[in-house]
Length: 105
Image 1 (cartoon, one colour):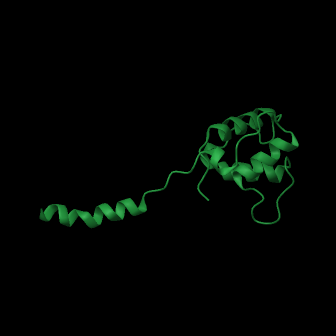
Image 2 (cartoon, one colour):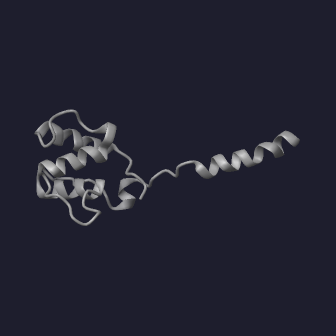
Image 3 (cartoon, one colour):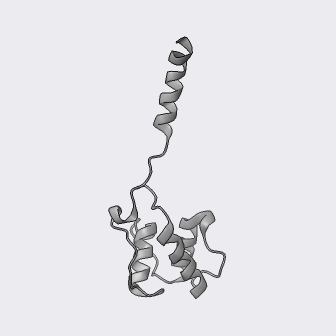
């Protein structure tokens, strides 16, 4: 019994520090555009919203080198290895974001 009582604070601490799973994309309003072509204005807007590129006021123009680098930074280790902005890169970003659980805000 003492062992159970002694381990209770540790269990509560671990439970409080555990990350809460993010809701599915459809619940956050970040669902992927069904018919948006890669590189289209709708696609850029979706990627921008999904990753929060423009959340801090001034945002680079979608598709610019600065914007592509911001996407790379937001994706971190998951970022595609192909040249940022290339069709292969856009396809990789699209596939990643369509399968990724959005980060908790």
